[in-house]
Length: 307
Image (cartoon, rainbow, N blue to C red):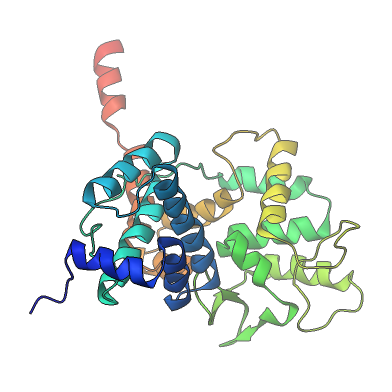
């Protein structure tokens, strides 16, 4: 017997049980994902519920889901459309599993995402110039750690003083990655360790559980930085050196780490582990970008025409 319920039965069940708004709250409680994902999915499903209300849709069908997707594409970036549609598909899959509503979102795709990078990376010389120019011990240590260890902003924020430690005979940072609860050791170059130790030596009342990088503003002095403040600090360092372009952001430091590792001849597997990529396909994006940039065809064509 097919476990999927019919639209008529679904409508009856929905009328008797609760509204889509309440059902979405039940789905959020059911999810077993990270706090960040819960926040993203909550925002996404609330957007969908608002759409239903604004368009007076009480019993959505497949055509309504497609219309909702098209409305998203008109105002949001492809990555956001993909996230919101993923939430809708998971929501309706759960509804059908719970025998509350038919899965009318099944197999409806999100948006096509361009997998090439939207951010630039820095050359080794640009990084050297940046580090020479930075006067703040915190900012210099943070920038060096982000570039040399490929740290995400969220990973920087989560670091504690105790996470600068020794593992297998090497100084490492115990990094808590995106969507992970466990911490992974990332080797720290000696030059970066010196900058980190210098910065810590100037701080007062340090405890092991204290943030590795702390805020300096009056409102949150010595408190934990936020991802927004890390992004702002790095962006200001770039601007101070004349690197003021939308394609250079805090994420560019991570992009730089991965790209320079590949240019130095490190294997794809080694770089994947270093960057803590969940899939080798993510690392391959960096490799493909380098292949395109190093392609000699345009030079050959130009030489043939202008020689």
